[in-house]
Image (cartoon, rainbow, N blue to C red):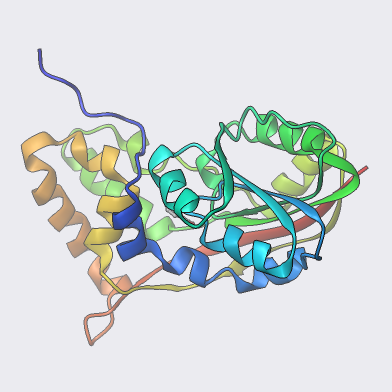
Length: 253
Ligand code: BEZ
């Protein structure tokens, strides 16, 4: 029996470290918005390999991390962090945390209503939900290039962009409808240099899209890269991804 490639994104801690370290390196602003205090109980939602979780621990906060990737959690455990395998759309905490923090994770959780409900349950009254993730227009050029090549080759173009990238108005409304008061929210373009190039980004973050083309996947990768080069590759050959961040702070009512 031929095994079909998985449509689910999977992670490998070493590959992530090599090609996506910028994810935590560029998170300074959202950590500033969180403004973690010593002794606070903080949940890091989508903690990944724990790079930012460890920064919060350094401040003196008591931090619990959760993530859906076993492989990334193994890396976090090696840092001595308190981390657990848990689905962000089914959080299992109640009235426990002073703050829930999240960076570059919410766009992977497409049942966003369930996430917000779980965060609301996990927080103490007055607790804050502070985060950053892909906002409206995030990686738009990259998704459009994949869709164009996918369509030409008769592939499933839905696999080109499975993420949740809301506008501030849409996300603010969701937060408010679920018992939060929005303190601040905004969309920030954040061009992101890709030190190891566009192909590595595509292979790391959109594996299911390319795997659907089996032995043609390398050719598809070449075509997507060629379409993107005029807009995202500079004259010295360096790639920049068209990231747009949605950053917010809300408190539990
Ligand atoms: C992001 O952080 O915006 C992102 C990362 C991977 C895929 C899509 C978006």
